Amino acid sequence: MRRRVLITSSILLVALVAACSASGDSAVGGASAEFGSGMTMTQEQAGGGDGGGSDAAADESLALGSVADTSASPREVITRGEVTLAAEDPRAAAAAVVALVERDGGRVDARSESAGADGQEAVAWLTVRIPSDDMTSTLTALEDIGEVRRVDLTAEDVTGDVQDLDARIRAMRLSASRMEELLSRATTNSDIISAENALAERQATLESMQTQRARIAEEVALSTLTIQISTTPLVEAGPPSTGGFLGGLQAGWNALVTVLGGLLVVVGALLPWAALGGVLAVAAVAVVRAARRRRSAAEVSASADGAGGAM
Image (spheres, rainbow, N blue to C red):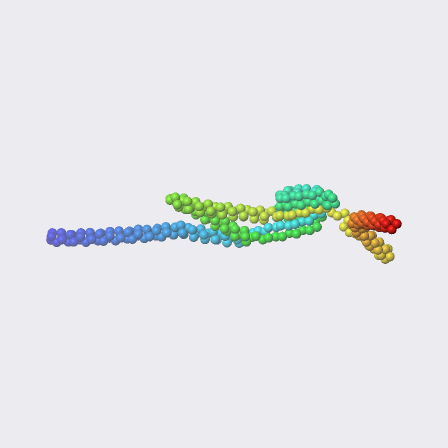
C-alpha cells in the first residue's frame, strides 16, 4: 500500500508539473505575441509619422487654407483716374487740392506749376494718392475748389492675381522652412553648401514676391489721381448775332476787314522783296545809261576823226 501511494503521488506530481509548464509556456507565448504585435503597431505608427506623411499633411492643409482664403477674400481693385479742373488761380487751387488730399490721409507724388506769361495761361499738374474709400468724397470736394470739367476713372480687378500670389508666398514659406530643417540635419560640407544655396534662392524669391504683394496692396488702398488745373476763360461765347439788314451789313464789314487784314499781311510780307527789287532795278538802269553814254561818246569821237581826215 505504501508503495502504491508513493507511485500515485509521483504520478500526480509529474502531471501537475507538466500542467504548470504548459500553462507557463502558453502565457509566455501569448505575452511574446502581444509584445510583437505592439512593436508592429508602433513601427506602423512611426512610419505614418515620417517626413513624407507630415509633408503630405502640410500640403493638404496648405491647399485647404488656400481654398478657404480664396472663397472668403474680398475683391481687390486698383482705381486710377484723371480730372481736369478750371480755376481763376491755378496755383492757389493746387495748394487747396494738396491740403484736401493730406487732410484725407493721402499724399502728393508729383506737383508742377507754371505761371501765366507771354499770353499763355497759368497751369498746374498734380499726381496724388488718396484712400480708395474716399474717392467719391474727394471728387465732390474738388467742385468747391474749381470747375470740374472732366473726370475719367478706371478700375482694375486684381483679385485673382492677389490670390495666386498669396498662395505662392505660402508655398515658398513652407519650402524655405523645409530647407532650414534640412540644413540643420546636414552633416557633410557638400550637403551644407547645397542646402544653404537652395535656402538663399528660396528666401530671395520669397522676398521678391512679398515686395510685389506689398506694392499691389498699396495700389489697392491708395488710388492714383492725376489733376490738371488751368485758368477759366473770361469770355466763353461770342457776341450775339444780329439778323436782317444790320446783320448783313455787319457780316459784310467783318468780311471786308478780314480781307483787308489778309491783304495787309501779304503786302507786309512782299514789301522787303519789293524794296530789294527796286534797288536792283535802279542799279540796272544806271548801268544801262552808263553804257549808252560811253557808246555815244565813242560814236562822236569816231565821227570827228573821219571829218578831220577828209579835210
